[in-house]
Image (tube, rainbow, N blue to C red; front, side, top):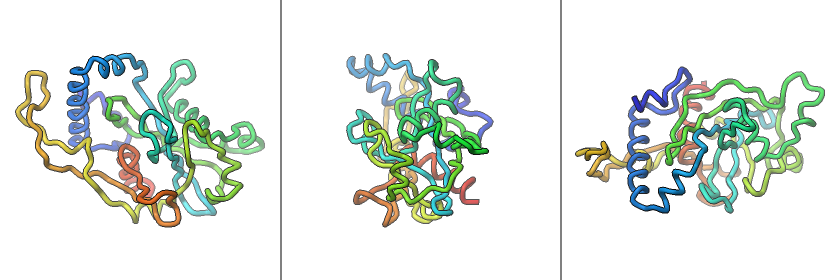
Length: 253
């Protein structure tokens, strides 16, 4: 029943086993948090239950690419991590998760919607579809929304790109693009915490009492030379988990 809550007619990102491991790891973390009153109260007070990220397909000087952001180093969570633009669904501002993804993308990239949409047959971003939701490590549903930017972008280091996407410094430190071909060629893997535990001997709450040290591996995409801004830059975690099946099953073909 719990697995069924995460399944929909859309393309899956996780296998059933990966989803099961993720939910068990979330359950384990929630049990640990309940043992700490401060952590428990801060977690329970959140009314934001769903989020959406935009996977922005684009071309850069004619080369099929994907746009990413590096989250601000000043953020309280996931600081400095490379991600897709996105955020929580707000029922006061959004009718759908697509609305949330587009709104958050504009807030992070700070592009001028009116200027870019003027005298054009197509909107600045066209939505192609979405995938099944993926659990964040605090148990929130994150739905990837796939969209295309309907203009050929300049290279991200040029003044023209920076003028187009000035960025919100409170949310992002860096906006950049990587060719799809380079992402496919550089993929590697490393132990992933959300799948890193084997479960056995479940206790009365259904949470495993014993944890093995067997490592489960997840996707990682090192930033190619010429694109990275920091040494050892990489795309990992939830962003890499979403990216890998889309590259292999959708964008690559």
